[in-house]
Image (cartoon, rainbow, N blue to C red; front, side, top):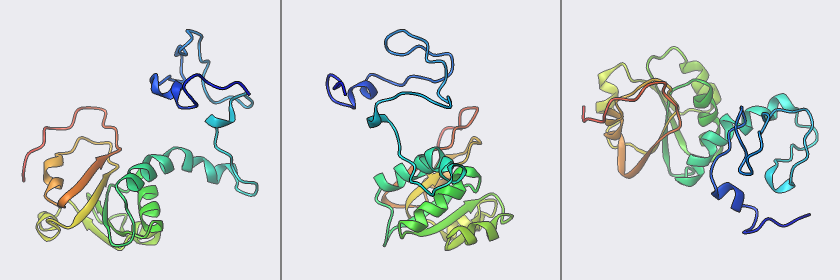
Length: 184
């Protein structure tokens, strides 16, 4: 195997290459990234264990890493209180992963409509953000807030829920800009 100049991470440090109608760093078209067969350096692959169905593994490669990475980076685990903002696809995975890491998990969602789902996935608590009392009751509670919401939000309202030195991480991708932060 040919060694990459600068080590396996060197290519990644040169920037992102899109998979749709993009040009690679060498100027060649990428032709997408969802082929049935492809030859790649094993340093840039993820091995799926035998016995793990691909339809079960696939969400881990997108929603899984999207939520796992910030939870791990900010040390979610025993003794930490994590709020997952939103119960869509990313939120579901965020709850499962935060729970698996041993954190105390709270779901913050617009309504209580998905409360049963959240609790089944491992949430310890579930609150509706449409209730103003939620913000009063939970002020200064969380070490980490993982926002998985793709709608524009006033993040200032959620900053008050963090403990000192807490982190609010946004992995949702709104189609339009979120309003500037302000205090509630």
